[in-house]
Image (cartoon, rainbow, N blue to C red; front, side, top):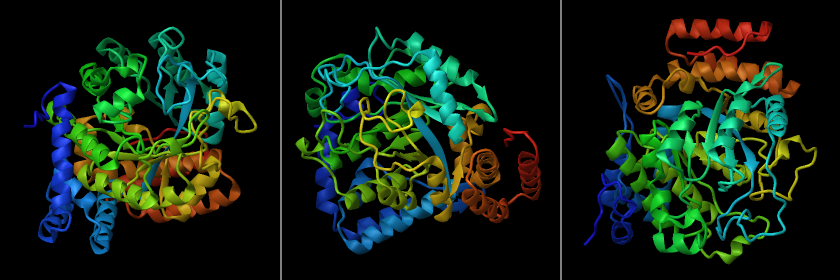
Length: 482
């Protein structure tokens, strides 16, 4: 008998092991039930209404049926539907960000991460505020406006006060026309009180990866340290939301546990947030286990090939249509390009996963958290995105206009992205092109902006966006936003 209850605040009830096993069994039994599958695809289609766009999404059990289906014709339909949903809510915008590693001191024993306590040959580093400043200036000089800060769990070396001081430093730096306008935070599970402090510091999204939803595997993979506490880690998002953080980001590390289990658990977590807090995850990330110092991914036997990875991305997009989906530079250019077609709406560019890596001429490997597959510069990534007909967006307007949590979801559901996020994307892309881009990227970018301006439905919004774009190009005026 399953103890599953999405409204419960207990980890083992909103992520019920029995419910996940039953879901996988149900999906396997129905993976060739074409009548059911067609009805699920129909249910998930975005439908235009007077109020905007209605998109029902799918439950973890329904989505697991699509994931289990191996019929090539159905898979093509899944991919087409994922692309349609992505286009309906996010258009062809792709939000850009970079990770910033503050410290790799960590007291946990996670067996898949090179920062684990027993790794004695990795170089341990922690940025001073001067070093944070240098890293931020290096990121600003590339053109970045949005960062995700990362730090190992170590109450002595990386207390919450250190994280808050770093956030303060990051926001304070104005260098030429550069500014980091939004800091997202990826740090260990903490208390409601500390989440309040992060909210008061003006963070964007609080991100925490579950790594695995399978409790038994979780305890084996996290044998020592505070992260060993499965319930405390899994219930962190509820504490973050109780602490006033509107936007939270989920993710699992695919490759640690069977992907069907993780997929169901991830969607159950999203359903839980919706059931308890009235708003699901702002973002879902899909990292895959990669090689790193002291870590060999081949020792884990749950690695997933690219075709399964693509299907997971598409099925998440169909199930949680309004969420932002993130893919990192762990993945190659080829995999990232395909993922963009299937629902991804945010990517990192020119990432360094080492502490202090952005100020180094050569990419340092001695303190990297994982191998970076996509090693292109930000300019190359921006140019590539535009070549694929995407708009690289450096926009952070929603956070600063208070459009977070259910307010952002409302904007999304009403189909107002084209009147709001679309012009914001074009204006921030203009900033990037004017201040940082190579000549080839500039040329391609300004041609794309001319074409994309025509897609803004409201005449008044289009006219204002045009004027603002001209002001950015002809003066030092920046940071226009709707």
